[in-house]
Structures are given as C-alpha cells and as structure tokens.
Length: 150
Image (cartoon, rainbow, N blue to C red; front, side, top):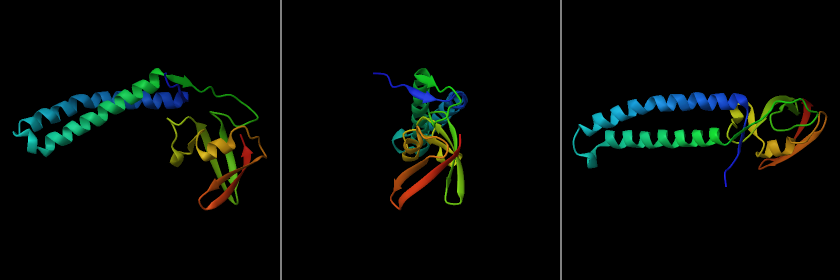
C-alpha cells in the first residue's frame, strides 16, 4: 500500500531543489570512488570506504525524495476558522508568542517553526479556533497554548 505524503507547495519545491543538488553530486562521488580505487588494496582503503558510504547515503536520500514527490498530496492553503494542515497559527504561552506552520511530517522542522500535524503540539492545535487553549503534556508538566491568530 502506497503511503501518501502531505506537503505544501513550498515543501515540494524545496525537495525538488534538494533532489537536483543530490543528483548533481553523483559524478563527484563516482570520481572520488575511482580515485580511491587507484590507491590500491580496497580492504584497507579508508577513502574508498568513505566514498562508497557517501554514495549509499546520497542514493538512499534520492530514492526517499523521489518516493515522496511521486506520492505527494499538495496541501492547499485555505482560509479557515480552525487550525488545519497548512495553517499558520500564532500561539501564546505565558509571555512568549510563537508562530507555527502546521505541515506534514516530511516537512517538519521545529527550529524553523514548521511543526508536524502528528507532533504533540500539532495534534493539540488541530481543530482549535482563535481564543481556544490547547494543552500539551510534556515531561516537565503541562503547557497551555492560547491561539492568538490564524
């Protein structure tokens, strides 16, 4: 059964850019492997092992991105009175205010304010309206977020 990946149009473009960059590195990695192979005995050749490992990582990331793009469901940006996938929501906890963009797990990057709809904060915010409070249980206790704007 195919997995459908929900991503924003912006996230799709970022993945396409990364895919292009990774495919561009294939030649460079092949050159590293060829150069390392010229050093001789492959069983004790650290450069060869490192180049092959890098090739494996790049090829697996290429396959992963291609799978996501092939099975992507683009999130439509719509105005709504409730938090949903694709919403940009401003929340307040105590004196601190945060702005989060609710995205699918593929695009999630909490340091950039993009949180997954499957994360504890994302789950708690989904379906809430301006003025509602979402409470998340953390190891340090409960944190309440008041929704300021959508």
